[in-house]
Length: 310
Image (spheres, rainbow, N blue to C red):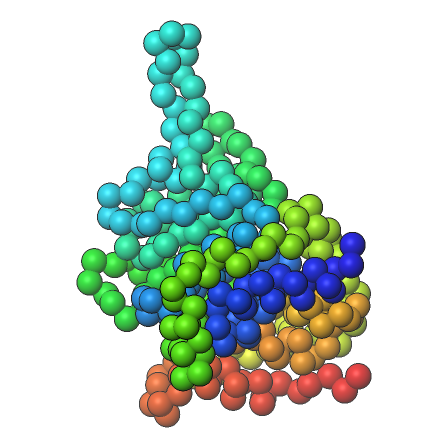
């Protein structure tokens, strides 16, 4: 597989639809290659759902979407057993999570019980219903969206669930020129221009290539030093978990793949620190007193950690 050409074509197709957000497209593709899940945290109407649909089409993935509301039940997600009077047996009806790309739209608007139904599927790749465990399709990716500014009728995601997301991304408003391009293309369905340029099997092959990538010992040390700094630095009241360390490494490997390299650099790590650790740590009183945002605090943290020379 000419994976560099394929990666380029995927980004090119998604960028047809999502104008001016190349860095976000790159990170979502990186998470897909790294085998992780994505949390899109932003205001409504900036293209979060469209981004997920464009990726599903470009990567030839079976795609399902659930609009989360307070009345969505775990059985809607995982499936349920129904009695068949003809066979006089209970038959399992799969839930919407049995797909390659599952879009959990406005995940913070459903109950904690329904949110927790995703914990097993996100971490282990299978769902358990009525004591029977069933494997999900491979590859399996969750892209969840939430609006962090509207608190009415929402349920904050617990730390255990946030930790399941490899990256947390924000799209933000488009630039002026990009907004003009969005208006010009509004008369047609932009998703119709997206072509399937990579198969699910090719994505699995990329994942294996990324997982097997060589990493120098000093890069391992660098990642661990960054995560340990979040635990002892006064700017943070809660540090990142070991799962955050693994997410940082896997995303750094994916960035190297996208850059057509067979090794990871410190720059790859720095590029993904904010996305992999930002939702796993909490700002301390010192950072809040200085008016620092999470991005600003993590940028300052990187200055404390020595960068490998090689």
